[in-house]
Each structure stands twice: as structure tokens, then as C-alpha cells.
Amino acid sequence: MSEPIKLLVVDDHPVVRDGLSGMFARDPGFEVLGEAADGAEAVELAVALRPDVILMDLRMPGMDGLAAIKELAARGVPAKILVLTTYDTDSYVVPAIEAGATGYLLKDAPRAELLRAVRAAAQGQSVLSPSVATRLMTRVRTPEAGPLSQRELEVLELVAAGNTNRELAAKLFISEATVKSHLLNIYAKLGVSDRAAAVAEAFKRRLLTPGGADAE
Image (spheres, rainbow, N blue to C red):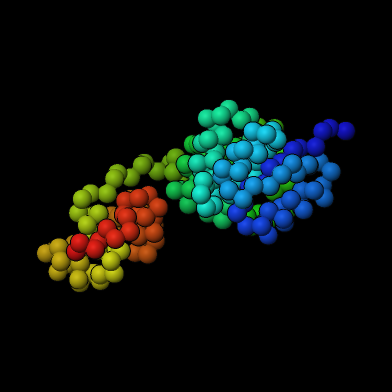
């Protein structure tokens, strides 16, 4: 009988950690070495316990999952990292994989899929949830959109401040049709389909900062 796959479970929610640990502990093919509530704790436990696979959440207080992945790589920790999160947008997926994650799954993955994914990750195979794989394929096939222009950033700042298209047009001395054209360009470049998503994505990419539109 082969050795069980040694796991480290990293998530800031105790209920999620308990659920994952319990699920893997019930399977003789796995051994849960420990749990961590943030990235810093994950790094220290990974160095000390030397797991085969780390199940890593991304959004956590203090050191987040992405920073932990980078730190683990910098320290030469050989464990395979399988991201397990609720977020599948490009701004989460691509940086995690670029930082060294072996796979990327969503928390709504069925139990059987998660078990298979951890086994595959332990063998060094890349594992992606279907939605993440689709996003990456689309990103590869679609030319990278250029950065937002200064005018588009101005429009986005005013949108974030709650201005309507009419108010935008008045403040920027342009027509409402031009405002709509700018918005469509912004949506295309950010990979979103509406105003709220554009603002959210801009904050994620740090194109906007809190209070940035207060000067208007």
C-alpha cells in the first residue's frame, strides 16, 4: 500500500478547515498534517511539516494566499499548492498560477473531484476547475487588451463616485454618446459587462484607490 498523501489545509474560516480536514481524514489515502488560518502560518507549517500538497485559500487577513504562494516558492518548499477558493476571475487565477500554484479549484467542487485533484496535484499534474480552464483558454486566445487611457480612468473614477452618464458628460464636457463609448471600451479592456463589475475589477487591479474620485 502506498504512503498517504500528506496535506496542509489553509483557510481563514474554521468551519471550512474542519470540513476539509474531516473529509480527507476519512479517506485512508490522505493524512492531514495540520491547518493554518492565514498565509504566514501556512508558510511556517509548510516548512516544519513538509506536506505533499497544500490546499490554499486566497483571500485571508494578514498574509493572503497569493503572498504565501510566492513566499513558499522563494523558500524552495517542494509542496504542490492547490488553490481552493470561491473566486475565479482573471485577477485571482492568473497571479496564483504565475506565482507557482499547481492547480486552481472552486469551493463548490464535488467531493470526488476534490479528492482526484489533490491526488493529481501530488503527482505534479496541473488541475483546473472547468470555469478556470475556460477563462485561461479565452485569455490565451484573446489578445491582451491595452491599458486604460487617462480619459477612461477619469470616466471610471467618476463612475465609482456614483455619477450617471449625464453627470459624467457634463463634468467631462463630452456627449453622453461619447461617455457610453468610453464605458464600452473600459468593459472590454477589463473583461466585464457592467458598471459595477468595472469598478470592482478596477479596484482589484489597483487602477482605482479608495477616495480617488473625491477630488472631483
